[in-house]
Every structure is written in structure tokens, then in C-alpha cells.
Length: 114
Length: 113
Image (cartoon, rainbow over all chains, first blue to last red; front, side, top):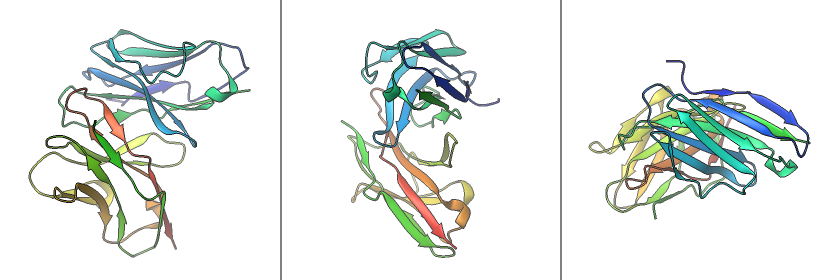
């Protein structure tokens, strides 16, 4: 398996524009997590899914953020409209539902909103 | 609520010396504990985990971690540090109820030549 795949790796956009980040989890993994990493706040859990169903979105900062998982092999994180303070590295991770197993992370998407 | 704490923002160690990166946890029941490493511009990579059994867990790149139930700690160790070990290290616990991974704030390790 190629691991967790995220696209794009880098995104530069203007304030007010819509941004969509994409994630393909490892095949067979039934948990998917979206994290955001910044210098100020560290690694924050935004939302996570189990079997394509959102379980906890309490970490999503505002209504401008939304996430979907239409099937087991694809998830998106959308920001509309984007703001400069959304600039961060966004990670997707996936795992099995066996509790003592580790999560596997993608390479991340570095988002810059100017 | 389950949590982990990494008390040191940064650890400096000379190449060839042993290194320790500290982690303490607060969980109910037996914990599932993990260590991850993040190199610049990369995602988090799994290093090792504690499930049950031996308190000394061996992992990738020569790293090991010692689980101590009485001190609620899970410190990461390596007998001889390399400059290439310089990176950001995260301790994490997986919540048995929610299945979330809860990460510490990270410790930056600098190995000096």
C-alpha cells in the first residue's frame, strides 16, 4: 500500500477563496482523522470519521470548515471562505478500529492564505 | 479524560550520548501509548507503541521506550544519539472509548555534532 495520500502538497490561495484538501486513507482502515498543525497551537484534531461517518467534529474551528467522506477511500476538508489565519499544515491519518494499533499519517498539505 | 504531557519543549544532546524524551500520561485503565517522529516538511512517522507486557518496548531506528505504571510515564530513549535523530517527537495515547489519538505538544530534539 502506498500509505495515506494527501493532495495537494502545497496550496497558496487568496483570502476569500474556497480551498479543498483531499485524502486517500490506507485501504482497509476504518478510521480517518484530520489534524491541523501550527507553531502556536501544535497538532489539533479537527474531525474524525469511522466507517465514513463523522464521529466528532468539535475541533472544527468555524462553520467555514467542513469535511466529508463519501466513501471508504476518499475524504475532503473544505474551507470556504479561507482566511490568512487558516494558514497551517493539514494532515490526514487513518487507522484500524483495533484500539492498540497506530495511526498512519499522510505527508500533509501546507496551506498558505494570502 | 485521557491526556499526555511532554514537559520539555526542546532537548539538546551531544552526538553519541544517550537521549531521553519525556512523556507522562493520564488515562483510566491500561493505556495504549505511542511515539511518533516528525522530520521537517514531513508527516508523523510511527516509532513504537506500548500495548501490554514488557515495560521496555523497542522500535524503529534504535529507539526504545520504557513504560512505568507507577510513575505514569512512557519515556523515549536511545543509547547513542545521531545528528540525524534531530526532529520533533510526539507522544500519544489512544482513547479506548472514542478511539481518538491524543497527542502531546511535541519535543524538539537537537543532536549536536
